[in-house]
Structures are given as structure tokens and as C-alpha cells.
Length: 83
View (cartoon, rainbow, N blue to C red):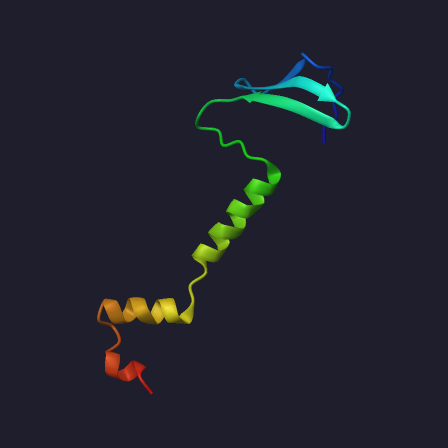
């Protein structure tokens, strides 16, 4: 991990297209601005984790969902699904 010290008004450059600007320092709160191309996703860490969790949950198929899908496409006759 690279650790840098910056003052308000200073910035760092990542690669050729991302600039992180220190906008304001007020006590233990630091406001930063990120200038990046639109195709680069920038999220707060907690938002990124929530997106990842939602994606994992959506990608996990439940038995009921698989059964419903199979029945919808005609692979399992409805009569075999009922007890």
C-alpha cells in the first residue's frame, strides 16, 4: 500500500486518467474529489460491499427458483412437483 500525505488543494494522479483531489480537511473529516472517466466505477467501500452482496445473492439459485424455471420451460411436468 502506498501512503501519501496531502494538504487541502493538493492531489494525486492514478494512471493516466484518474485524479484524486483533497478538497477540504475539517478535523477528522476529509473531503475528496475524484476525477475519472465515466467507464471507471467509483463507489464508497460500504456501497461496493452492498453491491457485491446483492450480486452474490442474485446469482445464488434457490431450489424453488430452479423448479419454477424448469416447470415454466416444460422440463418438469407440474404433476411431478406436487406431493
